[in-house]
Length: 92
Image (cartoon, rainbow, N blue to C red; front, side, top):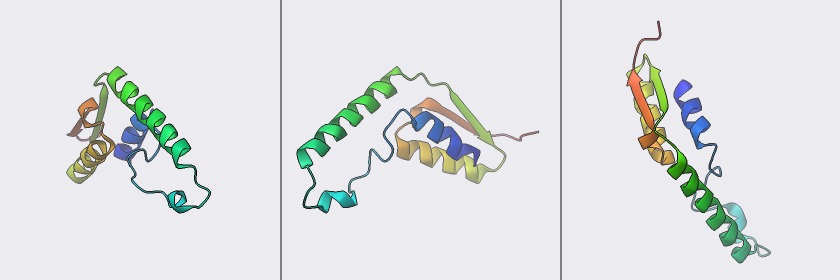
């Protein structure tokens, strides 16, 4: 699980599930869409600012090449792949 922790540790600068397209509360009758859009825009701006401030400085490895590939896919999905060096290496 090292790869998951590595990506989540970096991603903590962003609102969780920021890229998610639908939330159940969007269908609520009392939902304030203008407020939601404002909060979402603010979170996206913070995420963009955080990514611009980052330097490529995260390194990760695993002895299992499948875990390395999983970590790379997770980093890509999180939009932070350019900030990681992920390699297959023995842990000994």
